Length: 314
Length: 264
View (tube, each protein chain N blue to C red):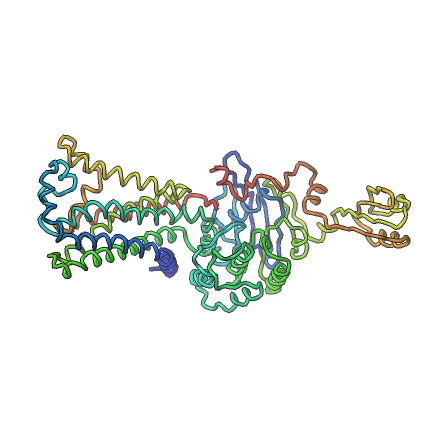
């Protein structure tokens, strides 16, 4: 089993601020690994330490078996990276920008870059200052992928992309996997991770709290369901089903939580006249709350990993 | 030169093309104006200078008065305006080189490529050196241009030497800004420090020239070693030492940048 990424007690602290603590992470060659966590949990810090943009406070990281600091240049030659937050020179066009990076990497053939741009519906001719956030993100994706690196690292790759482009991006990632290359990406969008990833690492407050296959993450999670019937029904019959709990009846509306047995619930409900049925995807927040207990700062958490400079935490 | 270093340098040159053009044209037109105007007020000028206090003339580097166009250019342009203004061209480039790129959040992307950090710093220095050389060439050519037309006796070679003498001088302050830019994370702080050193050195030299009892302080100023190349030719020892100092500052910038985290 080839390890493309291997860290040993990787720790990065910014003074008194939280960074990452003792992260032990393995990413296997050929897999799509999702790095999940709320903002500020340390995803970006981990990625930036792997790429030697930051130096670990303690611990070690290896990519392709090479030392993340000592062999950084040769590592970066094999990695395509999309930072979570980046800007490009305003006056350059997408074309000029990709050409510049291609020259740095010694890539002469830009046909794959062009085909990627086309698939993502990106026009490479206007200068960067005229591009919307979504289009800038597309340029970022193209530069991370056009040289077909053995490892693709993407920090929140789909942020700012519209749904159609997201779908095309997912297809591109599937192709990267089919070619046996490795993808490591961070996200806080569970549906995306669920769709793309073979395995998922969950990071919370700078610690890697779980690494699971996507399959097990899916089966472990709790979903909430609301069914509205034409007439009030007995809630207890639902409570009796395996995998169902928290049944509440409010007039003709039954809401419940289930970890399993969706089929049974639907079949039981179908015996009555169903007016409406709602089964929202659980957000990542819910998965966190469900499996890792409360006390997770979500959403507005301070972005310790993303932008320590903003807080002057040098 | 390594392939990537060349690619980086060329890219930086492309990005600063407009700056080079603006500075070259602006400074060149000033020089052009001085030479074009010289015939019309050379007589009144020397009359006026007679009434100036001697200390002030020393400060301007013209205690012997202005006898020809080269002397006039030396007083107005090559001993005053150019060495004060042109370092700002390199200082701004140096400040932008690392910290400025970082502040614009463009450094992560750039260093995701297989580029060693030293190459980034050195390529910024090289493109600064090339950019300044072009600005100075434009300055020399534009300044000399009206001389044959207006019948001013001015040697092109003298003007070239006057301009070339600014090259290591400007690079020194640019490299100082580059060093600050590599240590600090704020472009404004980097340019502020380098500009502060430039002004302080100018003042030190001016005071040292005017006041006999503190003339030794001039030796701490780069202006003291700058000389008057348009009149006396380039002092190659100073030229080389100042150039080497700018390279040493760049080497320090590499060391500092290699050690630190990048915050984008």
